[in-house]
Image 1 (spheres, helix red, strand yellow):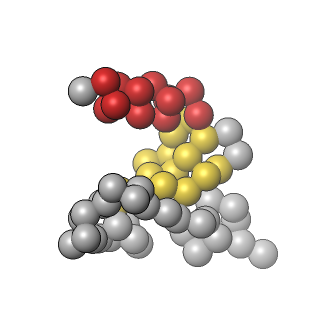
Image 2: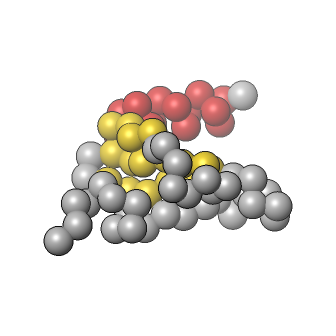
Image 3: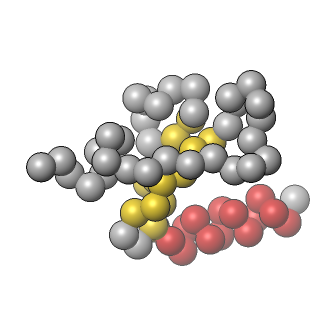
Length: 64
């Protein structure tokens, strides 16, 4: 059985506003937060954020 945070288990998605060239950020839901990765490097590092941190980050981005 695979761990729930392994990339092959997570359901990654991109925004509908993503670049057609594939230059986008992908997110996957986790219990209590989200994982974020670069779509150009799906096997690369991931940033795991608690829900409150993701809410703060996405609010700050939208405010710009």
